[in-house]
Image 1 (tube, rainbow, N blue to C red):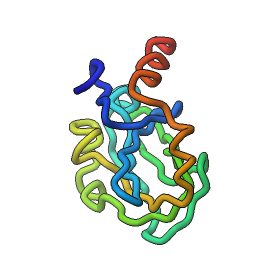
Image 2 (tube, rainbow, N blue to C red):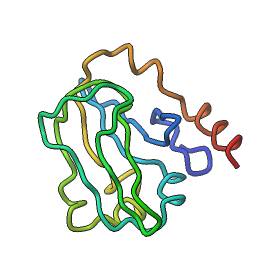
Image 3 (cartoon, rainbow, N blue to C red):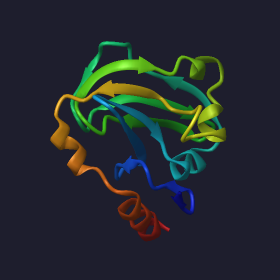
Length: 131
């Protein structure tokens, strides 16, 4: 299910990252709204497995035809896995932001940080305010 292009099973940040909780990890990507604002993605710089991040810190960058954008850690944790396919096919972010365009996964350091993320309904309201 989705609200327009906002899948309801995910959590979101005010900086347009999506988060899918998967046991003791989260999978992270950017929203359809974010990829549409970026334009064609041409390069992605991802962190290394094992790197630690605090919530709110830049953990990756996406370069598009419009410029370079930071991607922020929605929660604190260690990088568990990165989507290595994006090195060769960064356009997955534009084509399938909630699927093949996922960026990385983090181990969850503090489960309570998930409470600070937005529900699909809250994120949809944020988008409506931005339009």
